[in-house]
Length: 265
Ligand code: CAA
Image 1 (cartoon, rainbow, N blue to C red):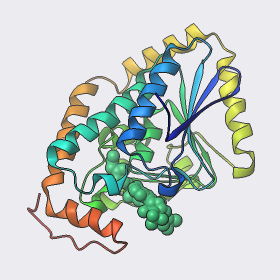
Image 2 (image 1 turned 90 degrees about the vertical axis):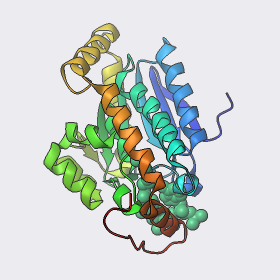
Image 3 (image 1 turned 45 degrees about the horizontal axis):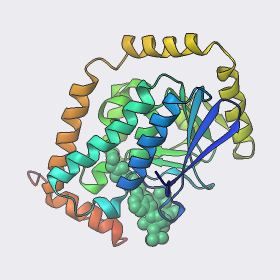
Image 4 (image 1 turned 180 degrees about the horizontal axis):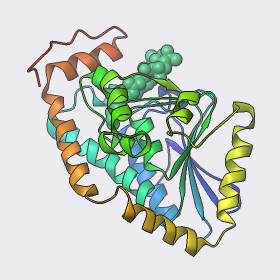
């Protein structure tokens, strides 16, 4: 597959980097990018040279600014379900693959951006990182696993507050609430990310891999497919709503949305 939206790098032995590269849209995820991520993750899972996978964004402004709103704007409810399921395929690979996955969040991680980060084993943030789930301001819900994975990091009350309000948080708050394991100054960010990734890659791969599998089984992956399916259908159904048309139309037209209130789903 020719990769147009992601860059694969192995700048240190054993470390496979996936860099989302759509700078014109702040690395927002369209369908093509999600397919490329899926292929890259499947390849990394099979590649014996790769022991740790790092997900990041190209440029110094954005990790991933969410799913591509311009592409999603005119989707039907059925297409909304399919799009959510494609995002789920990618998050499942990040979460369940046989190798540790690290989100190196170098800037905006909004909506699907935070959701890709929380599907990884843990998050390292630069001091420029900004997290948030702004979907409700677009007339939709988080559709790449945020309705349950965010709570795994920050607990249900904080996850609910963040999702209901769409509030963005900076790296220091993300660290305080347990979303990011570490915050590093942007100037040292890559050195620190590679240092930690390498320290993991030098351990026994089979021990690390088995630990990941067990820790996943003991924690949040029970009922994963049920949760993903429920989320994909709830996400898709909102693509039939006036608020989704208004919310995404307003983003593309660079204005504030005027939502209609109750019972418009
Ligand atoms: N989709 C499509 N295009 C996007 C985008 C997105 N998610 N985020 C940014 N862009 C585009 C902008 O439209 C703009 O394009 P033009 O130059 O052609 O106008 C370009 O990237 C630069 O963006 P801004 O001019 O807005 O940059 P800014 O610095 O003023 O603001 C920002 C940065 C705060 C990240 C702002 O771009 C923003 O709010 N983006 C949207 C974030 C968002 O709502 N993400 C959630 C999407 S829904 C989702 O992810 C659903 C899900 O759960 C799967």
